[in-house]
Length: 169
Image 1 (cartoon, rainbow, N blue to C red):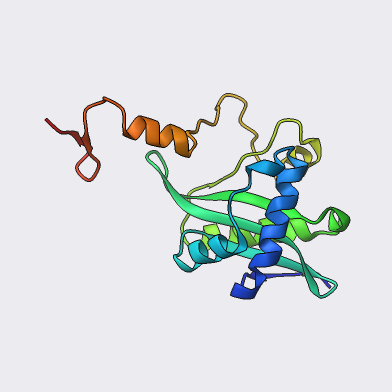
Image 2 (image 1 turned 60 degrees about the horizontal axis):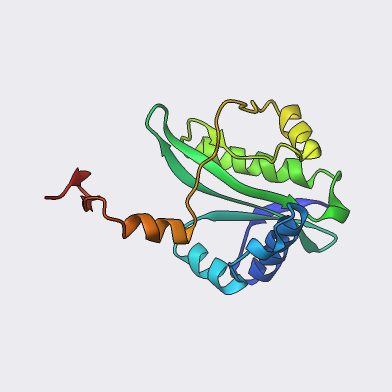
């Protein structure tokens, strides 16, 4: 029987293994820097929510998300990753995980659910479209890695008081 539940501390080795499997699938296996221990520490610090899908008495999938804020819509929820072990795909676990995340976000007042999907991941795109998702073609995700953040933060730009959102003299 398939089931989904909030993760518990003992689930983080399995969560980490699924993160690594996803990175391998996305052709980026060397990009994973988190460990089961760092994931657990961040989870305990309430930096994210995570649910696990169980089948055959073991964790076979997970979904990890967190709150963000839209200046146009208000509180929104971000689904960072949803992954199901390859040998358990097509058995309803992905749908159960996605529905659980959607229920969590809706129950706590999210105005929308946001996530990203690789354009070449056709099975995932079809899955999300089957759920009624809008796949935006005109928004490009942008990011700075840690080195980029440090470089920008230490640049010759004027210092900023981030609490008051002002440039300091």
